[in-house]
Length: 180
Image (tube, rainbow, N blue to C red; front, side, top):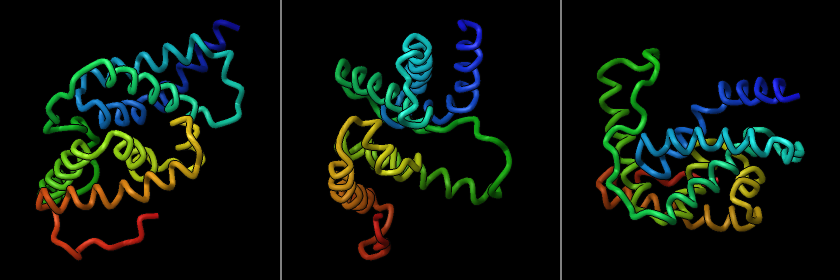
């Protein structure tokens, strides 16, 4: 059983560690700390393996662990400056070099603006809009109601848009899509 557990956790790590790392990185804005939190997430999953009842997906359960660890970490420390490069080492496939400059600038502006809004707003936006979790999954990860996720998201997206306007990312009226 112990060997099977190790193999399963290893599979989960291979499948979900990059996603957990990018989530924790967006939250703590420190690559080294995000790596530590990611490893700690999988260690906790191993230790508490028997508590996983399958009521949610493995990914949701892992993000719930990562969320709790990240919140604990953030409560214990003072804010640090935003990193200039959040996602270094991406695969080489994709946009042309001139497009990469624009993408990098847009990413930096987005993450800088995310870093300046309320932590609860940032969490919801990252989980729902960047990581693509459903409202139900987000509620499970954050251990709150679905209605709270919806109401916070309703306030969070305009707050992010306002911050992006402040940062000069776009001009008033340029972005007016549905937030849901």
